[in-house]
Length: 223
Length: 304
Ligand SMILES: Nc1ncnc2c1ncn2[C@@H]1O[C@H](COP(=O)(O)OP(=O)(O)OP(=O)(O)O)[C@@H](O)[C@H]1O
Ligand SMILES: [Mg+2]
Image 1 (tube, rainbow over the protein chains, first blue to last red):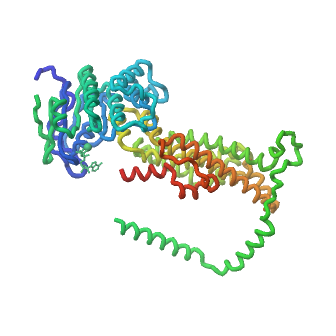
Image 2 (cartoon, helix red, strand yellow):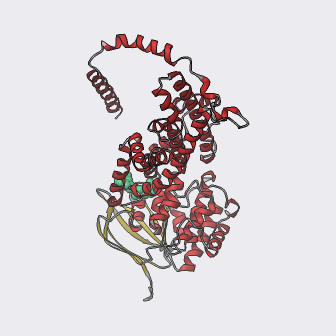
Image 3 (tube, chains in turn orange, red):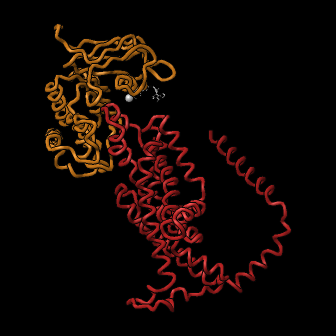
């Protein structure tokens, strides 16, 4: 590993969970450029791990250090996607670009032209530009996944946390989505942690695997 | 779990019955009462005096349609105007307050005082607000609007912050993780996510305010209540009944219009077209026959 590597996330002796710990003794670093797949059975704490890194749940023990900007540095695609069903595809995707603006750019006003174009580009890449003016609630599951991806791509975060965001997509779309995300990550020199149920797919797209088993996080090298 | 639920229902119903029996000590009074009511109904209330729909003798009516000079029309139009302005003012003030009161959007130290403020605005009955504002502004429409706006803020604020707290967690978590400000979370996530319910509450509040215009008018704050008050004082109960029928019909119409408006923002296929029964029955009754999409959503959320 090079000396210039950029550490984006550092978990030091961390235990996560709610009342009782789900995973203990987590010691990990995430380096810019990493694509990490998290594997493990249902209910083991994969989502909880992402939420802890995102700062939505406090760790039971240890510290989570993030070296990304607090505004806009982190992109999160929750398991349930977290889109706003009543708003259009465009509104949802442009929301991703908001956090690259000053906090004083009040949300009552539209985003400037530059952000608009970034959002448009992301929609184009994910093949949802034709749906731009549809409310998200009427879209199919796979289309909604692409909207959520476009939103995060348009955000240009340093760290992407994605919770099973490839589910419901057919093979062609998995390829489109992964290709777009990877380009976005490379362009920003970012990293991504993704929860993925399909082991072969995980090994195909990720350069690191975190397997969660018996309350421990075990790193498996892929390449 | 189910057994515990049915036990709770039985206990609550039993308690209510016992309390009721305890509250009403003297059942003997009931015997003469019913026949008195019958006399009152026959002699004073029925039939309604529809002269309230005819133009007043003074000032001379110059309008194209004569009924627009009637007591019922003039009073109703003023009541609707007051209710409209007060509902809009109340909504605009209540929206930021409800964001401050929602525990998923604001910290404890802000949410709790805001809730107390909203509760205080609700706990004074509208008629007391009307009296207070009459003291400040004298009798009239301004006092009516202020009083109505005040309790509208109290009620709408509560209904709205509860809707905002009821939104799904995922959109809010995504927004938090991204580092959005509270204004952004409120405007881009909480408000659009709860839009159907916010609209529903807004329309309900308008309807409520039209109905309540009758009460507020009683203390001289303008609108149809002013006429009701006059007729009550003069013991012209048949005219009171006629005006109340007019109020009822207007409320039914508003209810129907609000249902059509609501169906515009709800998910396609979620809303049945307004049915005939819902046109003629008040909301409370028709909604048990035809559950509104709002109720469906709520039950979906619980099962999620
Ligand atoms: N907010 C919460 N409060 C308390 N317990 C929770 C909470 N959220 C999740 N849990 C519990 O924590 C455990 C792990 O949940 P988590 O969502 O992290 O699992 P997961 O590995 O993502 O599973 P899946 O693959 O099914 O998504 C579960 O037993 C769940 O019931
Ligand atoms: Mg999960």
